Length: 326
Ligand SMILES: Nc1ncnc2c1ncn2[C@@H]1O[C@H](COP(=O)(O)OP(=O)(O)OP(=O)(O)O)[C@@H](O)[C@H]1O
Image 1 (tube, rainbow, N blue to C red):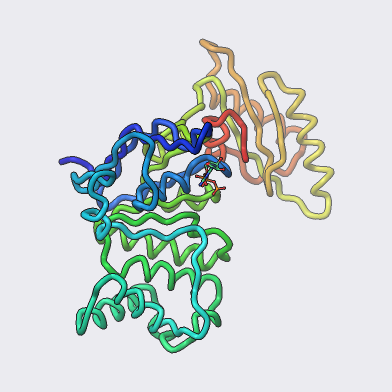
Image 2: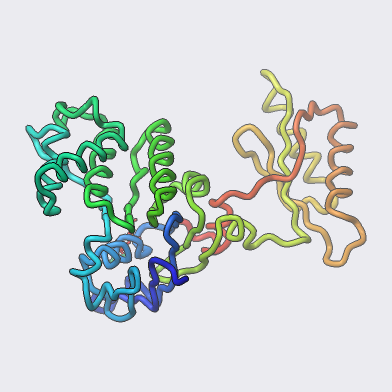
């Protein structure tokens, strides 16, 4: 079965600037793709083209097998697009706002009321139906914007930086809503700078820089990129009180004196330790790690956690973009 969305060799030039350069990827129904890139990488331009708001200079996009470039009117009803800046109107309640857009989507009579009610129920906006949209918190306004995107029950959702500016609770709620939408069989593309958020929400991700896709694939596979069997990252935590600085400094000095330790840095409440093993070396990574732990404990340092450090999407992003973060 072919993918719901197929993007092939997409290119968009603005004069001499190539904003999107040969972008190719696919997306299945029911899955969430994270679109990651620094400012100006080409995320919004790509999403705008997928929303049929802009035309590519070249390339093809098929949605449900239909060309988005040649037959935009045919595929538009299948697409829900939430831009990075969404407006609300003064003196309009949540219900009126959604009802207005339901009319714009051509929904009439009982069907319209049913869709608006369904969307308000899904997004949890029901109790706020009579509130003015301007009186809502950012998280709630963003739900209204998402609700508007869902009124015509699209198959493909394009969300440009939807988590931007949301507090942690609103982000978690957004994540749950998006997961529920994917479970309903919708394909979702979400762009973001908040990489840790994306790792939890996405099935696949695409890293874009200067218009080019540098990596695409399952989040787990992307996380593995740039890792090697000869480099090991460890995370060490200490049970510390007011002596934290002294303990951390001693540990840092001691670790840096050890063979194979390539770098040590502080990270939130732990030390991140890079171990380099010689290629083909007899010593196994776990033995080298065990030797380090013994050194720390023998020195009387209060180690309370010690183990391999999990790579996160930020590490993967830095690896595939070669460290050029926006
Ligand atoms: N209408 C336009 N005319 C000329 N250049 C444009 C236009 N739209 C975007 N660009 C340029 O294309 C490049 C890609 O922009 P785009 O907005 O797609 O990036 P982005 O990844 O979404 O970044 P951000 O996270 O900052 O929104 C940038 O260099 C931008 O300045």
